[in-house]
Length: 140
Image (cartoon, rainbow, N blue to C red):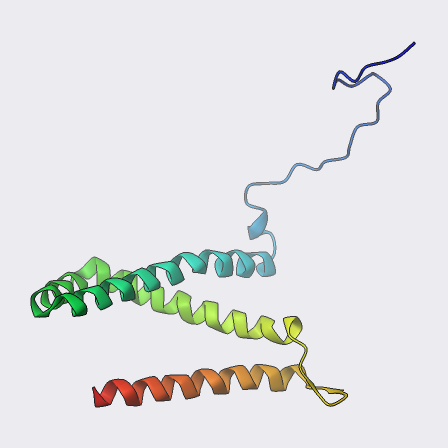
């Protein structure tokens, strides 16, 4: 006698053990909360990217568009959003740098570079890029 699969369970079919997961599971441990904050910080990175693209567009369109952009940027809600965004973008960068030594193995010859040196290298590169941009923008 051939049986066809109907997709239903028989009384003797084993059931999978699936624990109920709370909607707020990420509040149970500080590590989970930091993980969710880091993932959520991507939304602020996206806002920052859009903001810079709008700024570039306003600059390219001319003085009037740039003045309108500056007026819009000076509104309280945009200033508040950009202050919060700055905090989340810095948080995103710092947590990214902290994860880098685990994700990236750097070798010099046969020896592995210590994770602390990889982390320090990231911060040095970030500082150098910031200084170069600051010097370039001050000269403009």
